[in-house]
Amino acid sequence: MTGKQKKQALVFWTFRMMALIVVGLLAWILVFIFIKGAGVISWEFLTTAPTEGMTEGGIFPAIVGTLCLVVGSMVIAFPIGVMSGIYINEYAANNLFVKFIRIMTNNLASIPSIVFGLFGMALFVNTLGFGDSIIAGSFTLGLLVLPIVIRTTEESLKAIPNSFRNGSRALGATKLQTINKVVLPMAVPNILTGLIISIGRVSGETAPILFTVAAYFLPKLPSSIFDQVMALPYHLYVLSTSGTDIEAARPMAYGTALVLIIIVLIINILASTIRNVFNKKVK
Amino acid sequence: MDIISAENIDFYYGDFHALKGISMGIEENSVTALIGPSGCGKSTFLRLMNRMNDLIDNTRMTGNLIIDGQNIYDKKVDVDSLRTKVGMVFQKPNPFPKSIFENVAYGLRVAGEKDRYVLEEVVENSLKSAALWDEVKDQLKKSAFELSGGQQQRLCIARALAIKPKIILMDEPASALDPLSTSKIEDLIFTLRNDYTIVIVTHNMQQASRISDKTAFFYLGELIEYGETRQMFLKPRLEATQNYITGRFG
Ligand SMILES: Nc1ncnc2c1ncn2[C@@H]1O[C@H](COP(=O)(O)OP(=O)(O)OP(=O)(O)O)[C@@H](O)[C@H]1O
Ligand SMILES: [Mg+2]
Image 1 (cartoon, rainbow over the protein chains, first blue to last red):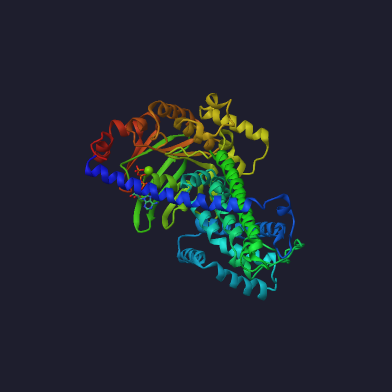
Image 2 (tube, chains in turn brown, yellow):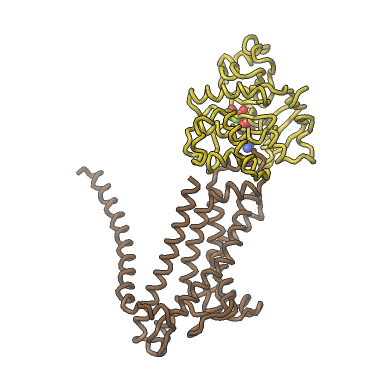
C-alpha cells in the first residue's frame, strides 16, 4: 500500500469503528434491558396494578396512562402543528411575521422539558384550573412536541416542487383545493414521520408530566380527562428511587423499561407501515 | 375579432422591467408562436394570459389584456374560472401523483363535477383529443408517473382539454421530449387548432414554421416583429428577426 492508500484505509477504519461502537452500545442497552426485564414480563404484569408497595403486581395503570397521554398530546399538537406548518409554507409571504414564527418555534424546541413542566403546571393546572389531570399533561406534552410537528410539516411541504402547485392552479383549482388534493397527499408520508418522532418523545418524557398529571401510585384507571394517571416513565423513576423497597422493586423497574421500549417500537412500526402505504399510493 | 388583445403591456419583477409596451392581437382558432432568445420574456407574456404571474411575489403589470371581451386584470375577474377558460401546458410534464383517470378528471372535480358518467365521458374524449386514448385505455387506473415523458405531456394536454378551455397556452411543450414524441405533439397541435386558440412558446424554428399561423419575435422584453409565419420566415421585415431565425444570434 502507498502512503496515500494507508491514510485512506486508516480513515475508513476509524469511521467504521465509531459506527460499530455506536451500534454496539445501542445493542448493549437493548439486550441489557431485555435480559433484566424479560423475567418479570407476564400477562399478570401487563394487566394488573402494582401491589405490595410496588414490589409485586403489574404496571397496567401506567401503560394505560401513557397511552392516554400519547393520544391526548397528539390530538392537541398534531392539528395545531400541521395547520401552522401549512400556514407558514403555503400561505404566509416570507415576511417578518413568518421569520418571527420560525425563530419562536426554534426557541420553543430548545427549552428544557422541565421548564415546560413548570409552565404547564402554572398555566393548565393552576390558572386554567384543570388540576393534575390527563388534559393538563396532554397540553404540556403537546406544547413540547409542537415545534417538531410544525417543522416536519414545513419541511415536507417545502420538498414538493412548485410545478405541482402550478399545474393544479392552472386548471382552475383554488389554493385550498390545491393544498388538499395535491400538496397534502404528497406530503403526508413525511408529515407522519413528524408524528412518529413526537410519539416517541411524548411517551418517554418524565419532566413535563411530573407536575401536571403523573400519579405516584394510582391503581384505579382514569374515568375522565380530568383524572390523574400513572405513566411509564414516571413509574420507572418512582420504582428506581422512592419505593418502599427499592431492591425488591428493581426487576419491576426493568420490566417497565422494557414495556416502554416495546410500546415505542410498536408505535414506530405501525406509523412507518402507514407511511409506506401512503408512499405507495403517491408513487 | 381578436380573442386575445394585449394593449401596451408593461411588466415588472420587482425593479426588473421584463416586458416593455407589448401590444398584439391574436385571432380565434389560430396557432401563434412566440419566439426569441432566452430571457426575452416569452414565458412571462404567456403567464400573463392566465394570470399565473399572480402567483409570483412582488410583480406588477400595467396596460390592458382583453380576453374574449373581458379585461382579465379587472378587479371583478374570478381568476380561477379565468384559468378554466385559458388552459396551460408546461415545459416539463407535471402530471399529479394520481391515476391517469384522476389526472384528466382533476379540473372537473375541482369545479364540482361528481357524476361518474360525465367524468368518464370527458376523460375518454380528452384522452382521444390528446391522441393518448389508444395507448392508455386499458390502464386508466395506473399511476400517471408510469407513463413515458411524451405520454405524460400528452396527458397534461388531455388534462387541460378536459376543462374545455377556449385558449391553450403552451410553454415549450416539447422541449423535454424525444423527436418522435415531439412530432406527436406537433401533429396534435395541428388538429387542435380547429377548436382552440393556441399560443405556444418555442425555441425550435422549424417547429414554429411548421405549426403556427402567426409568429411573434420577442427581444429583451420587447415585441420586435409580429406577423404571418410564412411571411416572417421567408421575408422578415427586420434584420434582427432575420438574424435570429437563421440562427445568427440568440
Ligand atoms: N420569477 C421571476 N423573478 C424575477 N425575474 C424573473 C422571474 N421569471 C423571469 N424573470 C426574468 O424575466 C426575464 C424574462 O423571463 P422569461 O422566463 O419570461 O424568459 P423566456 O423568454 O421565457 O426565456 P426562456 O426561453 O429561457 O424560457 C428574464 O430576464 C428573467 O430573468
Ligand atoms: Mg421560458
